[in-house]
Every structure is written in structure tokens, then in C-alpha cells.
Length: 199
View 1 (cartoon, rainbow, N blue to C red):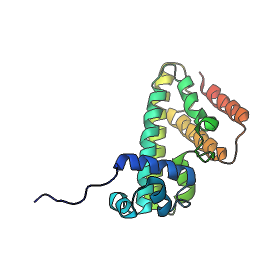
View 2: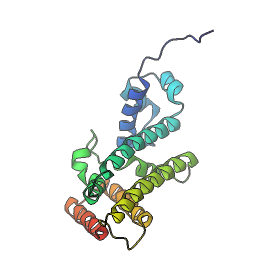
View 3: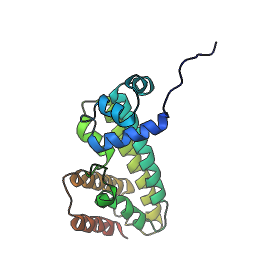
View 4: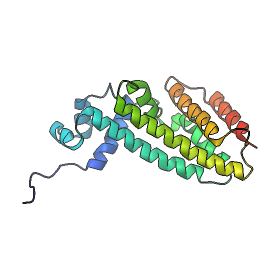
């Protein structure tokens, strides 16, 4: 017999997207279930039924954030020459004047924020973060490998090492941006990093 019951009163994907924005602007610890209920206009029981507890809800939001970010990363690096697209990726945290939350607070990178707030004490969060960082370095290394073969990027070190360095730059900029950022100095540092890759 088909299972019956009252249909969900909300769109799960839209609710997750809105929760992502709330978690991203406030952080995991500072966002309560009641905050989510109020902001999403969804009953507590419906949230638990659809997403489980707050931690599972948060980690699902982080996974969604990464899916969107990865699509942007792949698209930005699918260019020739590569370095302008790579610079776009690196400058993302520096453009926080365009990308701040509704509360006017720089949000940084949600994966980086999760690293700072939940890693290493939460093993599932640690795996989500580690997988995201691996994907970043794999995608960037692949693009750098192609650019090395085309003679655009220096081959004095491996694409994997170059990609790892760029991960550190992206995450460092994202973290520093939450405390305020000298945009001119940050862009100069990014330009120095990009120039260092040039063949």
C-alpha cells in the first residue's frame, strides 16, 4: 500500500539554499534551530523530518556550497590562457565588498569556516572539508598541467605542488578577509602569486 501523509509544506532544495545563506553569514554555532525555524518559516518538526538534526542540516548545506563553488571553479579554469581565470578564482575573497552578507559581515569561504569551527573534533565535517580541498587541488592541478604543456605556466615544480600553494592562498585570504582586508595589498599579493606561475 502506498504510504500516505500530509505533504511537505516547503520546497526542500529552496529551504536548503536559504539555510545555507543563514549558516554562511552566522556560522554553525551561532545559528540555532529556532533561528532556522524563524528565518525559513518552516516548522521545527518539518526541518527535523527533512534534514535531521542541526549538524546534519549544516553539513548538507556545506556540501551544497561546495557543489556550487566547484562548478564555478571548473568554469573559470576552462579557459586559455589559464592565468586570467586563475586570478579570478584567487581574487574571490578580495571582492567581499561585492559579496558580503545581508548583515554586512564578510562571510569568507564556508568550507574554510567549517574547518575553523568544526575540524578536527567532528569527523564527518573533517571528511567533507578534506574532500573539498582534494577536489580543489585536483581540479586546479589538472588546469595547471594543461597550461604547463601549453608553455603558459612554469614547470619548475609540479602542478600538484602549485595547486596546493594556491589552496593555501585562497583559504588564507578567505580567513583574513573576515577580520578586514586591505584590498589593494591583497590584490598585489595575488598578482605576485600569479606572476610566479608564469612561464
